[in-house]
Figure 1 (cartoon, rainbow, N blue to C red):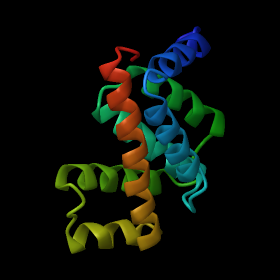
Figure 2 (figure 1 turned 90 degrees about the horizontal axis):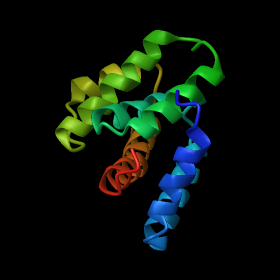
Figure 3 (figure 1 turned 90 degrees about the vertical axis):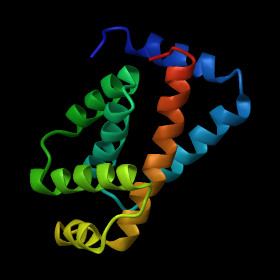
Figure 4 (figure 1 turned 180 degrees about the vertical axis):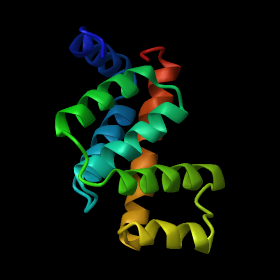
Length: 137
């Protein structure tokens, strides 16, 4: 992680303030995502998956640090399942197969969690796209 992460984050927020509605939308969506029933490791896995896919280096750095601060994941296999599911939701624009949804549920997640993944994808697609557009990442 960059030693200047607070400055990088502040710069990204300053650039996003060009559109107060966009900044407000992201802050509300991300706060709502943080309140979901997904555990913190799972939420960070969703965010990192979106950030890596969208090549937002700022978000990758920031959320790798957040993941590290959480400590070891209690179940790495479960996180692999949510990463696969997030990638399938992205690749299919939400039209995952019944088998993919069943695999996600077999890892201990619920249909509610599946919808919460969609919320996380939305929040962090907004963030990563905006960061790349403004050259913040």
